[in-house]
Image 1 (cartoon, rainbow, N blue to C red):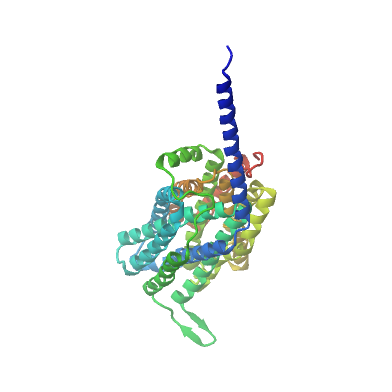
Image 2 (spheres, rainbow, N blue to C red):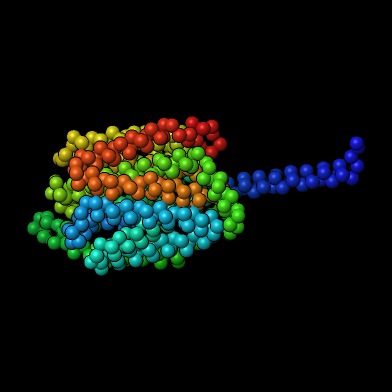
Length: 440
């Protein structure tokens, strides 16, 4: 049967119109990519500075922990319960954070401001509490507030710097490491005081220090609300719930993202389990002062300030898998060495070496998840990664507390190294690829 000439012409016109739309979309995407590649690094640096303050406040809690435990008379399991509650709250916050980030991309300033406001409120509650359950409420607020930062910040960076994604993630995490490095030293100094060359200062009472921490957290909330005015490249001001749910289903079925969820959780569980009871081991067994314990905790992140952007840049060039596999294997070996190293300069050296690889792998894991995430769903992917990571790692601190109470710090070391080894095996087996590359 012949087709009327009019219908043939109409079909041809429709096909040409579709081709024109596709070509225009490609040109727009190319233009957006070129503009993103030329983006000023000021946004990257500004978000990194805010991330540094967030982690300074978050890391200070660890050094305040021995004083809080002694004042409130907490058991090891109760201490582990604090950090489990913080992990659960952080994980629960990631889901709404991801939804809000992708649906209201141009309103990320509100989420970042609320994040730091929660940190401010949390330290006020910690400073005034006399009861364990109010302390739990405070650390829940702290965990929710700190997690609320991740989705809007990481999603914005992933969209604004698509060709420098590994470096952008690493720069943001370097800000975190600066905060994590300064917090133990400065907090340990103001809590523990100093005795040097005839100078004897007893320091401040721990409750006073928690109230001091309100100042940087509150100031950051004000600065973010005042100066942050950037949305993401190519992101609509708002997407519908149906569009969001469709994108979420695709992200949740993405094996590359799910693999990074598992890796993120195992890295975090290793970090938290080891670090919390490392502090108690140094103060209880090695009889380190708060300041000296703080110096050693700072070493866990100090070396990473240089290694994190280095590993991020390397992953942009050679791929994510080699970097992740190397780091997780190194973490396993170094943590396991603490079974035999009990103090002295080898103890300090191995903590510094652990600092080179423990935190620096996180931005590469994040970049690997972003590589396989469609544009506009970055917040959902980040939220899934952090929420899933929190689920994987939520039971680790309380389990480590039970292990520490029964078998001591060496038991915790074996526990943490086993989790890291599982992470290395996952990195070996899971498909990890860069955008536009074949699966590794």
